[in-house]
Length: 450
Image 1 (cartoon, rainbow, N blue to C red):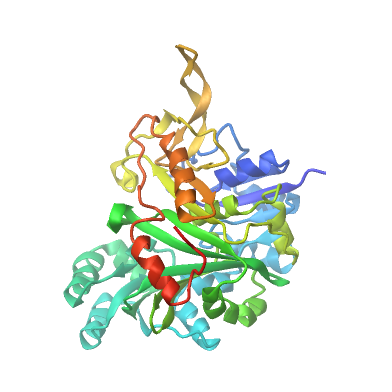
Image 2 (cartoon, rainbow, N blue to C red):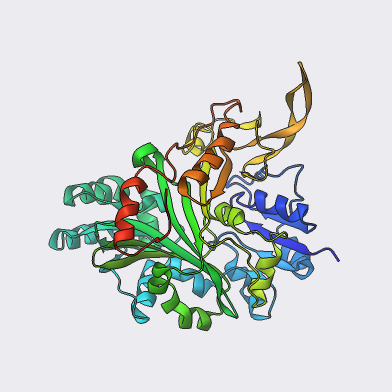
């Protein structure tokens, strides 16, 4: 009997997942939250059946689905909570569990409660009050928002003047950000100088799955970590059965996760120095492009069944211990500012996008465009763009170098896409050349090699 997958998306994150589910024999229904102006997102048109009437979700599709999946935790968790409590097969956090990420105060409190050493932090709802505190406590140079604020608002200041400029001259001067701060709050955190490294795992009624996902994010737009935060331009990851960092900052959370009835992925991002591992924040959901790294790491023939098994308290994830993965975001200009410049990016023919072993499409759809057939240009149905976030490319291997070679070979094939697609050339390299030997010296990421 065909299994049925319902995806409740808020930003066209799940095209790749939906396509792979269909290829494995699942029937898929995908709700992709419309744009703020009410127009429907076009990602997946002609590829995956999309729900157009939100009211049908509760009236029809929740009872239809064998698995209900949320890629994010900002929307729909409250709507789904009564169904979760009734035992519906939902792979998403409860609102209380999501608060460990969305409410910075709650996340820090939970870590302290189970004995995880944390960096000192203090919560605020007013930028002037935060600055007054920082002037008395100048080591508090990291600001992080709570709620549904743009993660690009996370800022590590170089000194007090830098922090003052961001708090007062930039954020306070912007009405929307000032309102968000008053509504959801933010924290100032002491600044630790060290190496950023995260680890995640999958938790269900049975406890932890046997695999842990160590990862290093590349958030800046340009090579050598220059330019604005974009959310993320790519990730270096490794899948392992044993992780020193997981033992320090994930496993102690077991009793809290059990009490919350948590099902899904949980990640803790840390600063590592000679004194230990200092957690910064939880991610209580699948991250992006981390979800694509995980897709590349998981070897199950059916890419969805292991997630349904997780909901049911069974660990069936199949991975290769120690495998390395590189993911690379391929974007189109004016990313990351297309929502400001409003450049039209729909309908551009995608070149090299049919390599599903390595290519994970995002804002793409089926359209019509000129394609080469032998020596002739013929207008045919083909993959075309539906926005600026084109695809994530993954490559795996036994070493960082091998994974990079595979990923960048696949990414290079997409450069013939019109519209000047681009990506960072240093995912998995760059700062890791210096940081990896230091991590090894401190006892972390053992076995990860170039």
